[in-house]
Structures are given as structure tokens and as C-alpha cells.
Length: 394
Image (cartoon, rainbow, N blue to C red):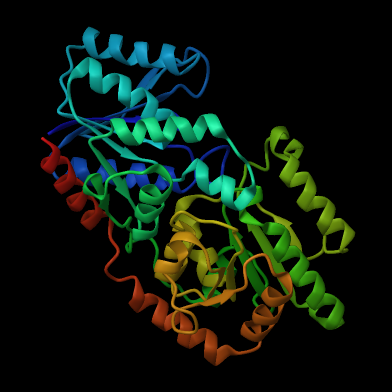
């Protein structure tokens, strides 16, 4: 099968946590690699990283990432059509990721007369509900794409229900396919070994956040929680370290970011510069060591469509403390393989965080159960199920 994938929003090769890159990048990169290994040919169309820096990168003998110049969505769609015609390419199916790519996919579907599969990854209506950002134009675009697409792949049943409820999508065109995790990379390592590898103090209580520095992640709740613990237990301040892993800290633009400024101000206001550190996005191969070094991995997001960080942390046997929201609810069973705190409530977050940091037995039990709970998540399984969706539409 020959598949054209559209990833207009971000190049799949961009490191998660940098710029616009996040879980969607992880999703696309692993999907195309596994589909390629199954013998199918995939071309991913994405934007150039720099102006006029068009290039083709082969990541597998069957898988190519094609960077094309874009001034806007319309010009980009025309550039794809020209590239396809110039190179005499034939595709069986289009798979678009995120709504920008969906708009391009709808146009290509009509011009190429082939089916369109859509994966939204996140919906504008969720931003309206949780962040009170009412992007009417985006929501209308998403409704149009949902009508145009022949099939829509979602990560959870909750996302399926949202599409049916808010976008009036027929359940017949929705397919639930769970993302995976690479167990060869994300696995448990000895905590002390991990600390030494990362030059972290072994005697500190280490709290880790991994993700984009974005308002939806609610990093401020974590800062408020540790500030409260430092006030109640003065000695705690010398015994813990919070690592904020995400963003390109070597870039001037990062430090100008509104959310980064807000968090830095809060850290300074609470006098926590000693123990809360921005360390930036980290190479993929190092993340398992951060998960393993962490006493607790905290995911305070107000909303997560799936929660890749939670899945990776569970695969490393980490103790995860998360807000009960979105796709995370399909990964964590409270007090079995992780813990929940009340969303938007830093008092509750601080209470449970303190409980976990002082209960080694509970952390060990949760970590062991975490490993067992995600054994069946794999990218190979996801690729095979996605392929099944493709075949059903041809």
C-alpha cells in the first residue's frame, strides 16, 4: 500500500517538547516506521524547517519525510500536488494529522480521488471547554473535516464520544486505535544508577514533569504544591528537586514565551530557584533514566487527549501522580498503578505528593503494577490496527 501522510503542523523528526512538537510527533514517527517495516510505502509531507530548505529524508527503505515550502495552507496544498505530479507518484490513501493537515487532506482527497483518514489528536472544542478559548473558525474547520473524512482514528473511546457529541460524527466512521510505547527504550532502570548517569543527587527527592511548557499543562499547580510543602515542612526545601523537562532552553524565544515567564515569576516569588529547574527537552534515549530517577512523575494537565508521558512513565515503572482527565483515565487506575489528584487543586496535589514521597512501599507497589499495566501497548500493534482501518476503506 502507498500512503501519503500530511503533518503540516510540525515535522515528526522535531524533538518532543521543542516548539510545537509533542505527543503527535511521537505518534506519527512510530506509526510510519512500523508501517514501513510491514512493507508499506509512506511519504510524510511536512513543512520546511527553514525557508526554501526543501529536502527529503529517508528514515526507512519504505518511509520518507518530504519537507516542502509553505506560505499558507493553500499554497502548501498546491506544492504537494505539484510534487506528486512532477515525481509521478501514486497513492492509495491519505492520512492527515491535526486539523491544518485535515484541511489539506480534504482538498487532496478530491483531486486525487482517494480515501482520507483523519486523526485530530486534539479538538478545538476541548480547548473551549477546558481553557475557555473559543476558536470558532477552528471548530468549524474540524466539523468540515469530520464530514469529509472517510475514516477517523481516535486514541480512546472518550475521544470517540466527544466527536459524536460535539461534532455529530457517525460512530460508523470512527475507529479506536490505542497508541503504543517502545518497550525496548522505555523500561525500568535502577534509580541510583539513573541518578548517577544524569548527575543528579541520589539523596534528593526527585519530582519530574515532562512536556511542552504550555498553559494546558498547568505547571503552576506543581510549583504551588511544592511551595506549600516547603512552607509547612521547612526542611523539605533542602531535600527535593523539581525537574521541568521540555522546551528549547538554548533559544531566546523560549525565555520570551508568556507561559515560561509566568512560571519563572512564580518560582522566584515562592523562593524556589534552588530546587525547581528548567532543563529543557531531553534526547529520547535519556528519558527512561529521568523516569527511573524520579520518585514521582507529576502530570498536572487540565486536559490530555491521550497522555504519552504517562504511558512512557508507566512503562518505566515510575510512580505517576496525575490529574484525572482525558485519555489519562484509560491508563491509570487510582491507587493501583498510579495516583490521581483533584484537577486544578494544588492543595490536594501537595497532600498526595507528600504522601507518596514518604511512602516507599506504596511507590514500589504502584511502580510494579505500572509495568504490568502497559505490557500490551505497542507501536507494532497500533500499526497493524491502523492498517486494518486503511484496508477497510479501500
